[in-house]
Length: 454
Image (cartoon, rainbow, N blue to C red; front, side):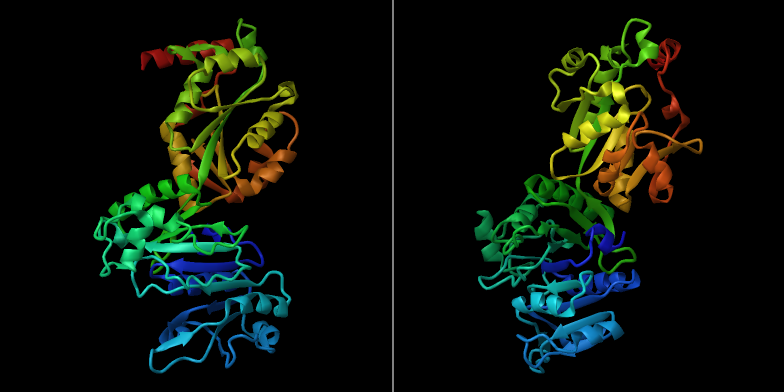
């Protein structure tokens, strides 16, 4: 996954990168991606970068006065879509000082391009993979829309000592730890989220999106995933796991994903047998309870069940489970109304929603987790299973598509978007058994007997 996809970069963003080592590499990789996509970008620093690294930029402007924007900047960006701006390099330190933070907004206004991206390296780390900021840093421009604190996954298992952590004593004090304590996922996440740590200087309204770098091995990936879970619980908007020196810089993007279980319909074909579909007996409970338990066992962060027909009975069938029940009084108008009801019931921080049906008893927790993993790995707008060459359920929709989902009418759910954006689907190939549905009383008898035989 590219960084600009992982960061969900929109037009005109100001990205400030802070924290551990890898910031300069990230800055230039992100700039390359933006230019390759047809955009224009300014890279800069509000601290210092190594003079040798300035050569990584295709065009470098040296400001004699780092508090004044260059007057020729709009014209230069027309000729050079990526421009690096620093103060004159210092031959003694071997570093190029940065610009004043307030100059970032002035430059953006002087260029007058609402699509221009600015990427700022806003502190230093002395090449350490984890750091605590000094009193005078980070120097994050107030106009930043996204702040990404970085750590390296090679820090896990090491200790809060100066050999491994920049300003180890400051980090230990912030966390209430002894100097020399092990760096665990909890320790790293707490430091990244601390208002005097990785989140220090976060402008109002800016997204906080930590990045765990150097995720090169499977053990590091597992530890990074544990850290991502803690970060999301602690308030991070999303978390990137990656390797800035690798081929694809982002291995996974972690956000909060919910399962929306659609269980509001009247299911007339099975109701003729004396019961609506979702309340048909299954195992020791009902089809509805079975589907809810499958969702709750998955790695999804939350579960919303949309009920409508015989809502009180359906809600009673879910008693004792940690989930949200959303009532759709307009259930008879079709599935699209249940989709809107489910989306409305989601917590504000949710980034993806998996829509699940109650009438597919072969859909289990493993499939839900496979859909979720594919979403983390690709950042795709939609993820769907594919069985025997056919599109199947459950389907995940990224929040970028929710406004269009809300506009769908009738009994079609997300099918219209799946057809319209078929090229945006990331597929999870699975066995044909997930295609089995309970649409009639006969289907129910056959599938229940099959389930009992297993």
